[in-house]
Image (cartoon, rainbow over all chains, first blue to last red; front, top):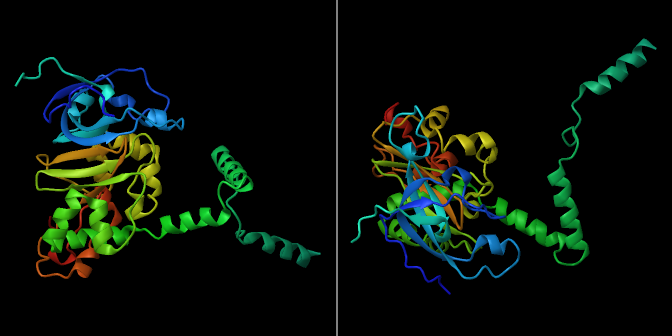
Amino acid sequence: MISPRDALPVGTRVTVRLGPPEVHCRTPAYLRGKEGEVIELLGVYRNPSLLAFNKPGLPRLRLYRVRFPQRALWPKSSEGGAASVVADLYEHWLIPSEDNADG
Amino acid sequence: MGEQHHHHDHHHVHAPIEDPQGPIAEDELLEIALRELLIERGVLSAGAVHQQIDAMESRNPALGARVVARAWTDPMFKRALLGAPLEAIEQAFELPMGGPVELKVLENTPEVHNVVVCTLCSCYPRMLLGPPPAWYKATAYRSRVVREPRAVLREFGLELPDHVEVRVSDSTADMRYLVLPQRPAGTEGWSAEALAGLVTRDCMIGTAVPRNPGAGGGS
């Protein structure tokens, strides 16, 4: 079963929810509250927070690759040069940003 | 008496061929307790545990290097590898790759250099490269490479131009990552075997790039 929300298209800007963290949380703290961009939909996967408790992990969740520019994560960083972090994040952690162009 | 003493001293000069000193760590105790309990209850056998350890250790960076060299020399394989890596490797190398996690190959380009980390634990493409190096699991690497990737790469001896995007993939979920490095210049006509010799473990994590020793210093 796939959750009812529509898939986020590649290019969608998303903000990672602040919390609350799950027990077997796969969303690193340093990304919470940060804004990035969906670069790929990897597929649908069982929920790791439920699998950790030997549950079936359903409904399955979409898993996205989300790219964060270095400057969005560490605004005070003095490191020069182009850099980014890409993390695999489950859909329930992602809030589409309001300023995404509609179509 | 004096001689006796000498002998006694001498005996202690040798380093003991034993386990390292120090108390056993809590997580080691937990692992032993859990393993013994599972074996006692018949959930696992000691043989099955060892078989799994053997299987894991039979995978190593040399295998990954062969996969990379094949991708450099065989465009059809490269396409298959980028599309469905585990299936492609399984078919080309006749190695079972099935497991609970998937593999994704990140191709380096002149614009993007990929580096892999797992900030949450130590996720690593073990099915291909075997167990990760100690530094990959260390807090220093895991916390620093997402914050100051260029400084970390510099410590590995890798300096990249500012315009190249250093893209750090944090393996947070169901996917394991392998970096497909760029084929070094001046290796045209090399055999896959010779090319594989240039691909180190770190090249496939992204903390190094393959160098052609004959090309002298260069890129």
